[in-house]
Length: 276
Image (cartoon, rainbow, N blue to C red; front, side, top):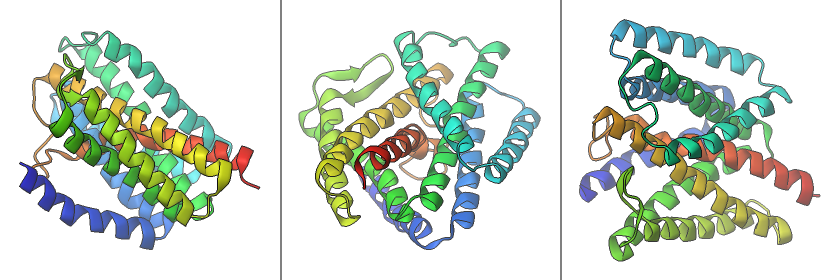
């Protein structure tokens, strides 16, 4: 499993890095929109939308929504959408606390889960596109937002393997441990400080960026747990089989969806308050 995960990552990571650093924002937004639609397709399966015709209709509607968001993405509208995404992830804490909610395979619960998908995926896509195109050194910051999730995932995997004894949320995701969460925070925080320094962040702003990395990692864990809950309720191991050793696309980007709106909102706040 580790070998498959490593080989898949060695293929995907350079492609993702090249896309973020080299592509113009319009192309970057188009590719990430396609990724978002594939993730929504897999989410619809986990939500219990059985009809392929209904799933195709959902994807078509979301393609239109993404196009509309792109055309009216100017501030302050973008911040309303990004704020809605952050608010959803805070609300999802209640769902994790009452994890049996919406577990029954009913049409109403499927609709609720797809509504959750809208608030999870669309704001994250807009936040990443906004970060890439509207911020100073936006490509570097967009790469950092994604790399923080990768770093946290890597740190959590190895810290959990080595030190993990106490489970983080055993009734939702039995493999996650508190030691893994601490390892993820430590690795991601280190990456944030190094990358922030390279991007010109200094003094109090750099400390604030380290704190933002902590919050971003916590948000990434939240996204991972929500998808784990969806899979548990759907009684499946992975969201799909697209990537060997990694499962489906949603299995790879669930943490990105939750982390990116938090990171972008936090970065904007740091720029507003601490950057001359």
